[in-house]
Length: 250
Image (cartoon, rainbow, N blue to C red; front, top):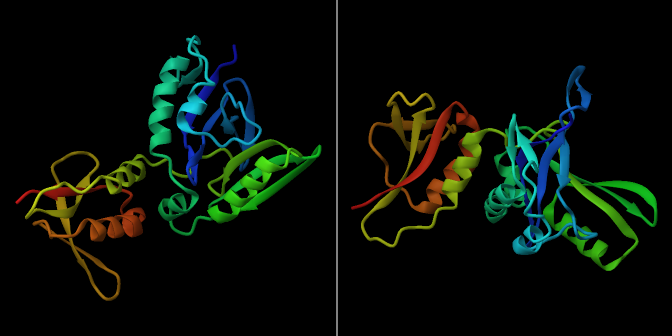
Protein backbone atom coordinates (compact mmCIF):
# COMPACT_ATOMS: atom_id res chain seq x y z
CA UNK A 1 0.00 0.00 0.00
CA UNK A 2 1.31 3.42 -0.94
CA UNK A 3 1.67 6.07 1.75
CA UNK A 4 2.53 9.71 1.32
CA UNK A 5 5.59 10.31 3.49
CA UNK A 6 6.51 13.73 4.86
CA UNK A 7 10.23 14.48 5.28
CA UNK A 8 10.41 18.23 5.92
CA UNK A 9 8.36 21.44 6.04
CA UNK A 10 10.33 24.37 4.64
CA UNK A 11 8.07 27.35 3.80
CA UNK A 12 9.73 30.18 1.88
CA UNK A 13 8.96 33.83 2.68
CA UNK A 14 8.56 36.17 -0.29
CA UNK A 15 7.89 39.69 0.97
CA UNK A 16 4.72 39.47 3.10
CA UNK A 17 3.62 36.19 1.43
CA UNK A 18 4.77 32.58 1.89
CA UNK A 19 5.29 29.62 -0.44
CA UNK A 20 4.34 26.62 1.79
CA UNK A 21 6.83 24.03 0.46
CA UNK A 22 7.07 20.54 1.94
CA UNK A 23 9.41 17.66 1.08
CA UNK A 24 7.35 14.52 0.51
CA UNK A 25 6.99 11.42 -1.64
CA UNK A 26 5.19 8.11 -2.11
CA UNK A 27 6.42 5.16 -0.05
CA UNK A 28 6.24 2.72 -2.98
CA UNK A 29 8.16 4.79 -5.54
CA UNK A 30 11.93 5.00 -5.83
CA UNK A 31 14.51 7.01 -7.75
CA UNK A 32 18.24 6.76 -8.33
CA UNK A 33 20.48 9.43 -6.74
CA UNK A 34 24.24 9.22 -7.37
CA UNK A 35 23.89 5.55 -8.25
CA UNK A 36 21.77 4.61 -5.20
CA UNK A 37 18.12 3.65 -5.25
CA UNK A 38 16.23 5.70 -2.65
CA UNK A 39 12.61 6.51 -1.88
CA UNK A 40 11.18 9.16 -4.18
CA UNK A 41 10.79 12.61 -2.65
CA UNK A 42 10.59 16.17 -3.91
CA UNK A 43 9.34 19.65 -3.00
CA UNK A 44 5.62 20.40 -3.42
CA UNK A 45 2.89 22.74 -2.24
CA UNK A 46 0.30 20.49 -0.56
CA UNK A 47 -3.34 21.17 -1.53
CA UNK A 48 -2.63 24.19 -3.76
CA UNK A 49 -5.61 26.48 -4.30
CA UNK A 50 -3.96 29.23 -6.36
CA UNK A 51 -2.27 29.43 -9.74
CA UNK A 52 0.70 31.25 -8.19
CA UNK A 53 1.51 29.62 -4.82
CA UNK A 54 1.88 32.79 -2.72
CA UNK A 55 -0.26 32.67 0.43
CA UNK A 56 -1.09 34.32 3.70
CA UNK A 57 -0.92 31.77 6.53
CA UNK A 58 -4.68 31.56 7.22
CA UNK A 59 -5.48 31.63 3.51
CA UNK A 60 -3.37 28.52 2.91
CA UNK A 61 -4.51 26.56 5.97
CA UNK A 62 -8.20 27.07 5.08
CA UNK A 63 -7.59 25.10 1.87
CA UNK A 64 -6.50 21.96 3.76
CA UNK A 65 -9.36 19.62 4.81
CA UNK A 66 -9.79 18.74 8.50
CA UNK A 67 -11.13 15.19 8.21
CA UNK A 68 -8.17 13.10 6.92
CA UNK A 69 -6.74 10.76 9.55
CA UNK A 70 -3.81 9.60 7.35
CA UNK A 71 -2.92 12.85 5.60
CA UNK A 72 0.85 12.17 5.78
CA UNK A 73 3.14 9.59 7.34
CA UNK A 74 6.31 10.45 9.26
CA UNK A 75 8.17 7.16 9.44
CA UNK A 76 5.40 4.66 10.19
CA UNK A 77 3.25 7.11 12.15
CA UNK A 78 0.12 8.55 10.54
CA UNK A 79 -0.34 12.33 10.77
CA UNK A 80 -3.88 13.71 10.44
CA UNK A 81 -4.63 16.75 8.33
CA UNK A 82 -5.56 18.71 11.49
CA UNK A 83 -2.18 17.90 13.09
CA UNK A 84 -0.41 18.83 9.86
CA UNK A 85 -2.15 22.22 9.84
CA UNK A 86 -0.95 22.94 13.39
CA UNK A 87 2.68 22.07 12.61
CA UNK A 88 2.56 23.81 9.21
CA UNK A 89 1.28 27.02 10.80
CA UNK A 90 4.24 26.94 13.20
CA UNK A 91 6.63 26.41 10.28
CA UNK A 92 5.07 29.25 8.28
CA UNK A 93 5.35 31.64 11.22
CA UNK A 94 9.12 30.94 11.22
CA UNK A 95 9.50 30.94 7.42
CA UNK A 96 12.84 32.23 6.14
CA UNK A 97 13.66 34.21 3.02
CA UNK A 98 15.96 32.86 0.33
CA UNK A 99 18.84 35.10 1.48
CA UNK A 100 18.42 33.94 5.10
CA UNK A 101 18.59 30.31 3.99
CA UNK A 102 21.66 31.02 1.89
CA UNK A 103 23.39 32.40 4.99
CA UNK A 104 22.99 29.22 7.03
CA UNK A 105 23.53 26.38 4.54
CA UNK A 106 26.92 24.74 4.80
CA UNK A 107 29.98 26.60 3.50
CA UNK A 108 30.65 26.39 -0.24
CA UNK A 109 27.19 24.99 -1.08
CA UNK A 110 25.37 26.53 -4.03
CA UNK A 111 21.75 27.11 -3.04
CA UNK A 112 18.98 28.61 -5.13
CA UNK A 113 15.34 28.26 -6.19
CA UNK A 114 14.33 26.52 -9.40
CA UNK A 115 10.82 27.21 -10.72
CA UNK A 116 9.05 24.80 -13.08
CA UNK A 117 6.05 26.23 -14.94
CA UNK A 118 4.10 26.32 -18.17
CA UNK A 119 3.86 29.51 -20.17
CA UNK A 120 0.89 29.27 -22.54
CA UNK A 121 1.28 25.50 -22.48
CA UNK A 122 5.06 25.39 -23.01
CA UNK A 123 7.09 23.65 -20.26
CA UNK A 124 9.79 25.99 -18.92
CA UNK A 125 12.20 26.16 -16.00
CA UNK A 126 14.13 29.09 -14.52
CA UNK A 127 16.69 29.34 -11.71
CA UNK A 128 16.73 32.21 -9.20
CA UNK A 129 19.74 33.03 -7.01
CA UNK A 130 18.37 36.28 -5.55
CA UNK A 131 15.05 36.71 -3.76
CA UNK A 132 14.28 40.05 -5.46
CA UNK A 133 14.40 38.38 -8.88
CA UNK A 134 12.18 35.53 -7.67
CA UNK A 135 9.69 37.98 -6.16
CA UNK A 136 9.56 39.98 -9.41
CA UNK A 137 8.94 36.81 -11.43
CA UNK A 138 6.07 35.66 -9.19
CA UNK A 139 4.48 39.12 -9.23
CA UNK A 140 4.62 39.07 -13.04
CA UNK A 141 3.08 35.56 -13.07
CA UNK A 142 0.18 36.77 -10.90
CA UNK A 143 -0.66 39.40 -13.53
CA UNK A 144 -0.23 37.15 -16.61
CA UNK A 145 -2.62 34.17 -16.70
CA UNK A 146 -0.39 32.50 -19.27
CA UNK A 147 1.72 31.24 -16.38
CA UNK A 148 0.34 27.93 -15.05
CA UNK A 149 1.55 24.83 -13.11
CA UNK A 150 4.06 26.96 -11.18
CA UNK A 151 6.18 24.78 -8.87
CA UNK A 152 9.20 26.22 -7.00
CA UNK A 153 11.75 23.75 -5.60
CA UNK A 154 14.94 24.12 -3.57
CA UNK A 155 18.07 23.31 -5.59
CA UNK A 156 21.75 22.92 -4.79
CA UNK A 157 21.47 20.63 -1.77
CA UNK A 158 21.01 17.52 -3.93
CA UNK A 159 17.89 16.14 -5.56
CA UNK A 160 15.10 15.74 -3.02
CA UNK A 161 17.20 16.89 -0.06
CA UNK A 162 16.50 19.45 2.65
CA UNK A 163 19.26 22.12 2.71
CA UNK A 164 18.58 22.90 6.38
CA UNK A 165 18.24 19.33 7.58
CA UNK A 166 20.64 19.57 10.54
CA UNK A 167 18.51 20.22 13.61
CA UNK A 168 21.08 22.48 15.28
CA UNK A 169 20.86 24.97 12.40
CA UNK A 170 17.10 25.30 12.84
CA UNK A 171 17.41 25.73 16.59
CA UNK A 172 20.19 28.29 16.27
CA UNK A 173 18.27 30.34 13.78
CA UNK A 174 15.25 30.41 16.09
CA UNK A 175 17.56 31.66 18.85
CA UNK A 176 18.66 34.49 16.59
CA UNK A 177 15.02 35.52 16.27
CA UNK A 178 14.43 35.89 20.03
CA UNK A 179 13.36 39.40 21.12
CA UNK A 180 15.56 41.35 23.50
CA UNK A 181 14.36 41.20 27.14
CA UNK A 182 13.24 44.52 28.61
CA UNK A 183 15.66 44.50 31.55
CA UNK A 184 18.61 46.70 32.52
CA UNK A 185 22.10 45.60 33.42
CA UNK A 186 22.11 42.15 31.82
CA UNK A 187 23.93 40.97 28.69
CA UNK A 188 23.82 38.41 25.90
CA UNK A 189 26.40 35.66 25.40
CA UNK A 190 27.08 32.72 23.06
CA UNK A 191 27.35 29.25 24.60
CA UNK A 192 28.82 26.06 23.10
CA UNK A 193 27.84 22.66 24.55
CA UNK A 194 28.32 19.03 23.56
CA UNK A 195 25.42 17.35 21.77
CA UNK A 196 25.65 14.28 24.00
CA UNK A 197 24.69 16.38 27.03
CA UNK A 198 27.67 15.44 29.20
CA UNK A 199 27.86 18.85 30.89
CA UNK A 200 30.61 20.39 28.71
CA UNK A 201 30.14 24.09 28.05
CA UNK A 202 32.26 27.04 26.91
CA UNK A 203 31.51 30.64 26.04
CA UNK A 204 32.56 32.70 23.02
CA UNK A 205 35.33 35.07 24.09
CA UNK A 206 36.50 36.76 20.88
CA UNK A 207 38.11 36.39 17.46
CA UNK A 208 41.76 36.94 16.53
CA UNK A 209 42.95 38.79 13.44
CA UNK A 210 43.40 35.52 11.54
CA UNK A 211 39.75 34.59 12.21
CA UNK A 212 40.37 32.06 14.96
CA UNK A 213 37.66 31.94 17.65
CA UNK A 214 38.51 31.86 21.34
CA UNK A 215 36.29 30.22 23.98
CA UNK A 216 36.44 30.64 27.76
CA UNK A 217 34.88 29.26 30.93
CA UNK A 218 33.06 32.52 31.67
CA UNK A 219 30.41 34.31 29.56
CA UNK A 220 31.60 37.34 27.63
CA UNK A 221 29.15 40.26 27.53
CA UNK A 222 27.80 40.88 24.01
CA UNK A 223 25.05 42.95 22.52
CA UNK A 224 22.25 40.99 20.86
CA UNK A 225 23.46 42.22 17.46
CA UNK A 226 27.03 40.96 18.14
CA UNK A 227 25.75 37.55 19.24
CA UNK A 228 23.46 37.26 16.20
CA UNK A 229 26.25 38.23 13.80
CA UNK A 230 28.64 35.66 15.27
CA UNK A 231 26.12 32.80 15.11
CA UNK A 232 24.92 33.59 11.59
CA UNK A 233 28.46 33.76 10.23
CA UNK A 234 30.10 30.87 12.10
CA UNK A 235 27.46 28.27 12.99
CA UNK A 236 28.49 25.94 10.16
CA UNK A 237 31.99 25.63 11.66
CA UNK A 238 30.56 24.10 14.85
CA UNK A 239 28.14 21.52 13.44
CA UNK A 240 29.21 18.97 16.11
CA UNK A 241 28.18 21.30 19.00
CA UNK A 242 24.99 22.94 20.19
CA UNK A 243 25.48 26.71 19.83
CA UNK A 244 22.93 28.94 21.56
CA UNK A 245 22.41 32.64 22.30
CA UNK A 246 21.38 33.27 25.90
CA UNK A 247 20.72 36.21 28.21
CA UNK A 248 22.20 36.71 31.67
CA UNK A 249 20.33 38.96 34.05
CA UNK A 250 22.16 41.48 36.21
